[in-house]
Amino acid sequence: MKIIIGSKNPAKNQAVKNAFHGGNFEFISMDIPSGVNEQPFSDEETINGAINRAVNALKQGEGEIGIGLEGGVQETSHGLLLCNWGALASNDFDPLIAGGARLLLPEEIAQRLRAGEELGPVMDDYAKMKNVRKHEGAIGIFTDGVINRVKMFTHIMNLLVGQYDYKKRMNEQSE
Image 1 (spheres, rainbow, N blue to C red):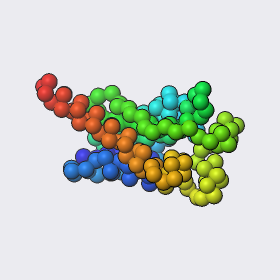
Image 2: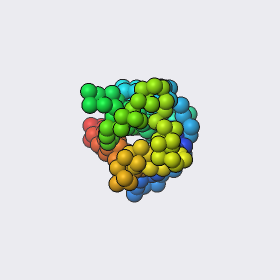
Image 3: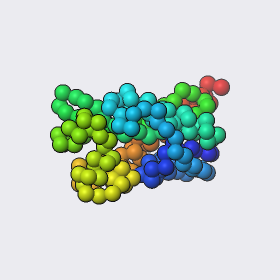
Image 4: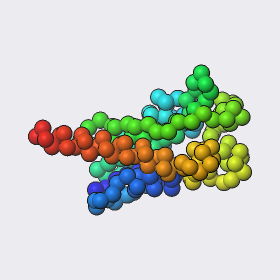
């Protein structure tokens, strides 16, 4: 089965590979635009980015499954939360979506995001590291490595693959 991943980010790619096991899978990663702001600022925008990546990965990569994973933030009465969403597109049904871990970002990070900066570069500056988004991610920094970006996106991918397997089984039983 040919699975097209709508990102070349190594953390996202590893998460997809972690979720698909026990089969004959070919993974192709493509740089697919999200079609939303560089810094998605709501669940809705982050979901739309994930769906756009998944649907366009499926079309452009000519695979059986397209995957989109997107990180964003969501404003709440408690402050700015990190949010993460994924989408799985196939030719058999509408895109599936699943969300992941949330945590409250420190106010000094939130202020910079509200001022228009993107989380990736802000985290590089804050953690005094390079390419945080390709490795541990903000989630890894703020959980002291207990959860990293691969684990977080693997959780989302497991939710997506589980939904996919269920829908496939239901479709086969109804035929």
